[in-house]
Image (cartoon, rainbow, N blue to C red; front, side, top):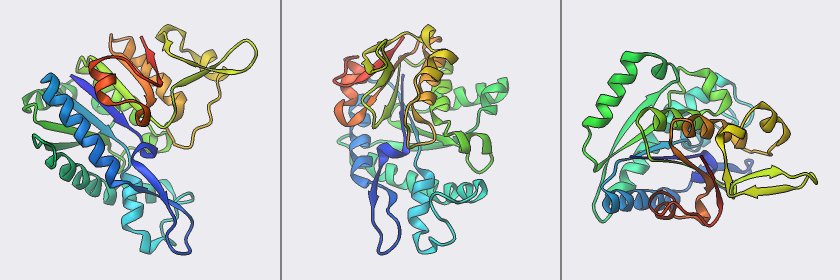
Length: 265
C-alpha cells in the first residue's frame, strides 16, 4: 500500500480574475496528470494507493469567485474557510473522478473526510481500516480533513499529519509528501541551507525544527511535513518529501529513488 499526499500549492496555479487580486485555482491538468500516474502505479504494482488531497478551500473559492467580496482569500474567518471547504470538496472529488475515469484502465474514486479524533478512537479507526480493506484495488480512496468540523486542522494545515496517520495505521510501504519544494533544506555549520537527500527521523526534534525556519506559503509547510515524516517513519514507513514536478510517482513509489527530494527513515 502507498499513501500520496498533495498540498494545495501542488494542485493549484495562480490566475488573475478581471480586476480582482490574483488567486489560487485548481489546475485541471495537474489533477489529470496525478490521476494518470496513480492509476499507472496501481496497474504496475497491484498495490492500493490512498490519496490525501488538499485544495478544497481553493476549489470552493474558485466556485464562489463571483462573491469574492464575501469570501476574500486571505482575510476570511475560520468559519468561512470551512464553508469554502464544504463547497470545494465536492468539486475536488468531481475533478479527480473525471481524471481517474480517463486512465487507460479507469479507476473509481471513494471519498472520506477525517479528523485526528478518528485515530484516537479504537472503534472508529478499526471501522476505517475495515472499509478501506474492503475496497477493490481499482477504487482510489481520496481523503481530506473534515474542515467543516475540525477547526484545529484548518488553521494548521494538517493534511500532512493526516497522511502520516493513515500511512502508519494502514502499514503503508511508502508515504509521498508531494510539494513544490525540492526537499528538506537544513542549515549547515556556515549557516547556509543544504538539501538533504536522507534525513533520519530521530534527528527531527524541537531543536531541529526551530533551527531551520522554512519559508512556507501553505499552512502545512516544511515544519509540518517533517513532523509528519517522523511520525510515519517511526512506524517503519519510508517517507519522501519532494517536488512532484521533478519526480514521477513511479520513481518515488516503485523505484524508491528521486531526482529532487528527501527520504526520511
